[in-house]
Image 1 (cartoon, rainbow, N blue to C red):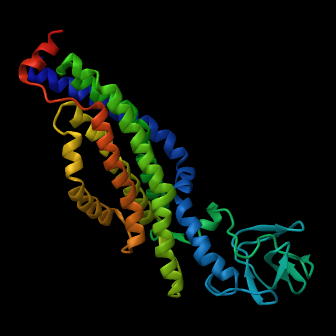
Image 2: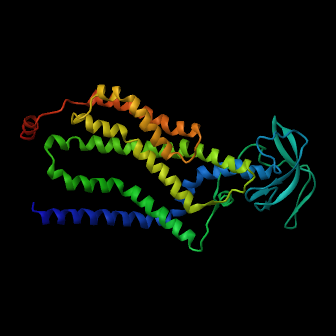
Image 3: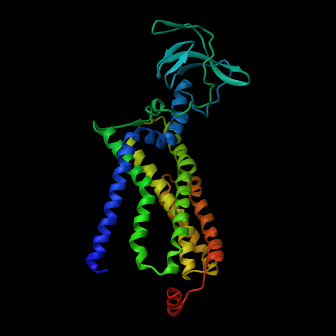
Length: 339
């Protein structure tokens, strides 16, 4: 193919990729609210645990142990139905701490009137003290805010775009493969399937680790500092979206260490012995990367980020030991290509 033919082929593959992202975007925008709620679960859990429950316990923090008989100001963190009466979120009622079935809970101390409906005294409130309500869109609104008029529209546009790119990645990778495959030797094409499969699996594992373990641990530390300092937790929703996506993307890319080791091992650029001898330098590099990715400055969260990377490094040694090959000469490569 001539140079212009290559450009025409590249343009065609780019158009296909953009069309795929556009089609995915139209679907993701309709579901952007649900996607953002899913991404907001880690911060909602921590806000509910550290701040909302603090207010529900009458200003006492989790470090200040409650005991049976304490008088508290119970605040409903979300709309709740009690005896057929809908109590709006944010409603505060006087209550006392009682022990029921071995668990501390709150009990009303007087008759409560809500919108002309009556809730009797000595009524056990549904949420045991110390437990956390399931995070919902309503409960998240206590900690996530938008600072501009167009903030919600911009937020959902960003969510839809990022989600569309994520869902279109398999098709985009196929377009990349279709563009470069004609320029590869036959034996080189055999590597594409395993590499794409490994890359996809490890990226999902990295993003899942960030969503389930790394980011919640960082949020727990940071939000806890704000509550202990007496600050009201109001988090910009757009900043939060950028932060969690950066961490999920960063750890998804970091989890590609075994994939890179597989490629370099197959072409003979690295060996298990080479990686084993360099483990001390690897630890230093991993510590630096963990410090960059970790949104906190404490050692515990840095270890949470660094531990999987260290494990992946030693897994890479095993991958190279199993799948690595000695580096071939030009004549060997030519011979393989002619088969």
